[in-house]
Image (cartoon, rainbow over all chains, first blue to last red; front, side):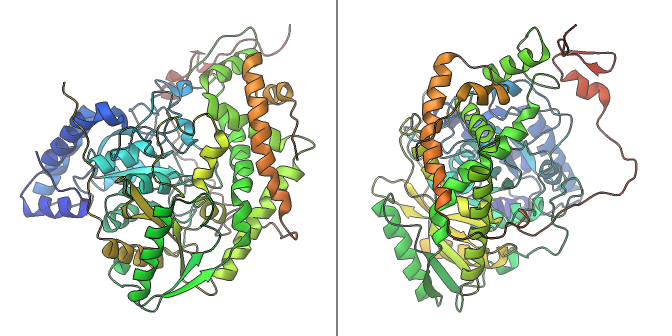
Length: 488
Length: 95
């Protein structure tokens, strides 16, 4: 059946009584049925669990127990979020068949908010990648062109939302893994301030950078989903216990009087013309709405990517030590414990994960630590100092989210460095811990989506959503992908 | 700055059993990546490295009170091998 394609509209329809949570679930499952063979957005759809949750949501609503805007809304989860009783693989062979004994905090919060968990979405193994091609269970494809990648690593979540096989999804963002796939699929993706969304139950990649966030069709939906999942959690020692921004309140405030910085370093060589033109046109639009536009320079951004590809693998090499064939997942036998562990890890991890563990181990090893890891931490400090200087002059920053639109499947698979360059615009916010989001602003000449990134200082989500909502209004982006239907 | 890596040593540190062909592939790929990563050395000045948490949250402990933890049997059920409430592994020490 045909259902509204935003959370806000579906939420209204549920309360008007024009449809039920069971209808919404039918609607997204029907879309999945029509598109999964082409897209492979999901690793696992929980038909039975989702049905039970949808019926419970309907019964609750009928009994007058309204849990808020996510009540009865079908949501997809990236498969690096632990779900009690539901297989969680991180798209890795090493975790094949693992059933977590607990829910991630974000999952508990969604359940309490009455959301219906549709299933688990595909990702680059352990969230390492920018194309969702590094999945041990096969790649996902882009709904706008099924010969192209959906971005990554939250590519399954982004593809599901773009295709309408979920009304919203959660992803995780360590270097751009929510924002870049959102840009490549014409969806909205938010990386919140580090510390605002609990990482309890998110299988760790790089703990000082990882944040969970929403992928949705609209900025308003992103605000609804974000407000449902964030907040202090004693189970995450990095969780923020102070006052949280009020993002929904700021959506209609406009940009009149705001000072918006355009980042000089995030343009030029390597950026597609259509992307640069779309961003420039949007900046002009913001100026017409009363924003003061300032070109700003953050020289440390030039070496942010280099620092990231030392810090993130270093943390990953430590975090992924837990996958050793002892407590969960794959075990490949050996004569000794050490041999068993080395064989399990050698066979259980795919190439990109292996590459990053080696890279991180090297960067942390004796003799190289200060030149690589230590210096990368100094670059991180320099990025923060640059941002602090710039945020004294401007309220928010804008840039392209990705230097290019969705690239063809396979195009960057054999060239790790080219793949890493996909994240050049998104990485600085992770290193700083600041919030950033991507909003679709148009299509290129091939009909592929272009995203604009809005960045703000830590806990600056109100101003970030204010700008994003204006960008969305100006763009008027309401195109939807036409996914070829495969018979059968 | 070309970076030469003793890949067998790094793989041993990381407890990754790799074939000779895999080692050669990773050795050459890591060389290229590390050459790019070495650009961190271009940073001017020596900024003070503070908390890696953007909001400066550090050293958080919960109250020292007993709370429910995961069910032992449920946790052990996920292990490749367990016995009598323990994880079982191959010999870790030589006889």
